[in-house]
Length: 374
Image (cartoon, rainbow, N blue to C red; front, top):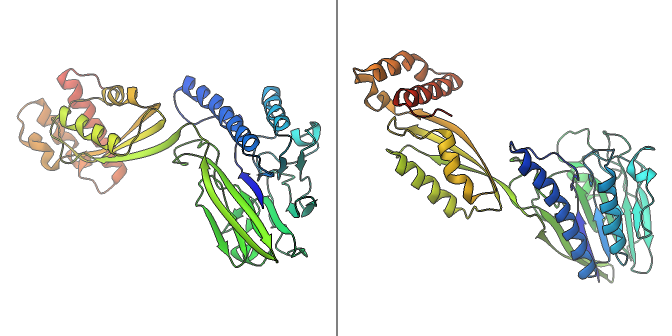
């Protein structure tokens, strides 16, 4: 039996897409910490193989301190074979870090866009793989499967896009099912949907080690697997394991029942608590539905209220005024006149125009109350 750690899409030095520059820099450091945790786990748990299925680096040219970190972690894992299939963000080119750096002896890097094989006779494993040698790869290197030794564990490590058309190594379901591989370690898709099986082949994406933006929700990690082949029959036990420090999440809250500032904050607090979001969470809060004109809180006030319990927060206001303006249509003061002047836009069939008018109404009413509009 062998132990395999399958990771991909680490994207070292990626710029995190959050507005707070200092916290974005913290996230960059924490991504490095997640990498160190991954290698420490591999060392302490005595893994036989680590498969890195592309995009270890976010770009082809890597900072010296990042290279030094990677080399140090790899060298400390000397008993674990580390096998790398460069991806579209970090392709194997003559000027790349893969070609110009002397890696520890336990590291093997695929360097061709054609399928290659690495035989590990001491553990009865053949690892096949390929490298992006440019930012794009228009065909799948294993669409014509190789001849495999059925007595050995046959693994494929590669970067590519399963399903649909793509210029990043398009892979079809038929490529997977007809490959004959026992396990296919994929990279490229940042949101893992677990390990699957088709025919005799197990396959999957581990997802990003750390999510990079709100399009990559949840905690990131890697796939931990034990594999064996007895009498030509392959067996695999695989599961995801968290390595990320934090997660991105989006929370949508309907404000239609809210009638006061206190009600709104209580509703938001309750939803955040119900989802278990805390200091490990980077949260995008989206307020939707109708919002009473009695709510005077500015966006900054809402953010100031929720931010202390979270690592990072941002707010999206997608609310609309209550029908008839919560009585504003009959208000004889300038508030009513302001509402009625916006009413055609507020009742428009164009959702973008309604949203703009809703923002204008909210800011205008805040200004008339003497409140901050920021």
